[in-house]
Amino acid sequence: MSSIAYVADEKMIEYHRLFGSRNINFWRLSSQKRFKDFKKGDLLFFYTRSEHSKKKGFVGYAHYDSTERMSLKRMWKKYEQKNGYDNFEQLKDAIQTAARDNQIPEEMNCLYLTDVVFFVAPIYPEDIGIKISPKLESYCYLDQNDPQVTVRLLKLAEKVGIDIWSAAQSKESVNVFRKDEIRHHLAVCAKEIGESGLTKAEQSKARKLTKTKLDDSFEQIRGSENDYLKIEDRNIIIAIPFAYMQKDYNIRKLELMGKLTLYKLYILRNHLDVDRVKFRILTEQPQPEIIELVEEFLHA
Image (cartoon, rainbow, N blue to C red; front, side, top):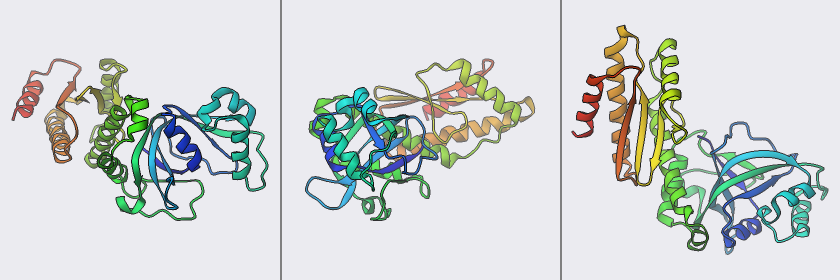
């Protein structure tokens, strides 16, 4: 699950914060480098100066949805104030100022972002143990060298708090933030668990199980080959396929119980904001022994 620190115009960000924007459009000049590893649902953190500081920090974030190339006029016609400005002329001036030759490109890369969350106060790179060059002009990845960076950033943001005004404009902000914390914690846990020892045939069975047994309310845990997650209010369900060849049954059983243990310990150790954790084991045929083991494990 990728996270990006994106250098943003402070005036545009403040506009979105004041108006409690939920979905926004970010324009990018064609000359700026392209994202190499950034998918729908990944987090783009707004890295900019706050209103009363010359120092850049993280002031909020949004979820990446899609990219589309557009002309300035088409961009305004489609998104209007979602571009972060009151009118077309203000947007035009901002783009001219950002362009090195003051020339507006015929087309720009437009990033559509959803589920915006703003923080009460900026969080600075050193607060989460990283360094960002003061010369950064576009963006940088946060988790390339340390998969815990986004988790630390979200945990600190939880302490700092969600912006009261923007949250009041959109009551969903707090709920979105809590879900993102859970997703990123479990993604880190899945990465620590590592790849499974499944054979190609077993991997094929596992994928078939998740495809046929789970509905669209489940999402794959980033960093995991086959594990899925469902967040229901204050409860979470982790779905894990139990795929095996008969000769490897006992090994796969031990791997499954080890995985359940690691997920449970990680959730407890990091104090995830959930009331109950459920595990759903996906099997081709009824597996009373496995179900009994899981029940004993959950109530231990």
